[in-house]
Length: 469
Image 1 (cartoon, rainbow, N blue to C red):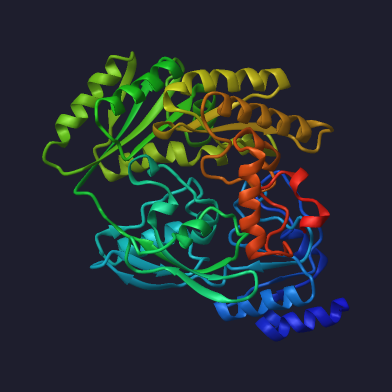
Image 2 (cartoon, rainbow, N blue to C red):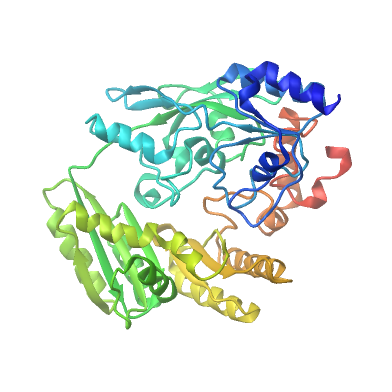
């Protein structure tokens, strides 16, 4: 089919105003927030409904065109870039909150709903409930993207990751069929097919509707900032708190390097002798909360804490959290790009992991600033670099691979929440045997034998032969 005819066919499905095809427009959608770039697209299309998505998928099958679903483009593992051209199915126009039921504690949303917007909608209407998952990019990332990567976030220590908050999905399968998986009530009989789709990175179908679990807001929330002499002290405090039976809603760790970068950007006022910071959030019943706060303070003091600040007002709490949420933006002051690595280790291995990460950075000549969802050992080392300088991109990617090898060696994982995409597909054998990977690959091919649905992602390149495409 000629390009003009193809564009006319796409316009007939979604309308002429919802098809972008100029070179500049196609280029903009050929990359996401990762360091990777994709191949040239045929077009970018903006469906308004599941039915239009299904028509687009059928058209792609008929004309052997790859297709990729995309939301806000904040993915940093290359999961939403076009590796084999085709069309980009942009879901940002499908951004409605369709239903809120606080009695049964669920909401129904389209995939283009921004994470933070759902929270604000619930708060503004005084429902007394929230959608808990809160990735660091929640002010721009979409719930559909969170589902694709099974995102975690600041509060996953106590409340779990995205998969713990998805009750059901409406999905357009790779053959164009629209199906409903799961539902409005938890623990439905049969295989957990919705669970299979969550975290599949858009390779098994396109999610067009999401039923999310709502959580009642806690009676009281206490936010604290604890400063320590070293990362080792801060990490030891984390282990001590959890070993004591206290489960904070959030435990975020920052090392000295990232603290200095943040301070230059938002002027938090961190003391220069602080080697690490912990942001702690405790929530629950007001009765007994002070006892928990006092106990946490004791354990921090036992690990050489420099100071502990407890937020007295919502503004104080927002200021403390700003220092964490502004981190990745602050990195832009150092270099044109930042490579953010996403791996996991057991939390008792945090000090060793962070020290080895810094050593890896020094070996490649890069400064490394460390952030971590410390409670569950999810590391986010951030490496500023300039991809325009010859060899820098290759070097920073190799440094990232070395960091992931350390994570696996210490008993962890190559990803905590950002997904595999194309960034880590060749690191999958660090965690899985060839047989295990082949089982996963068979699931993909059973749903999508032509491998048109977000093709050539997740699995090692050695598995993605022409015969399997």
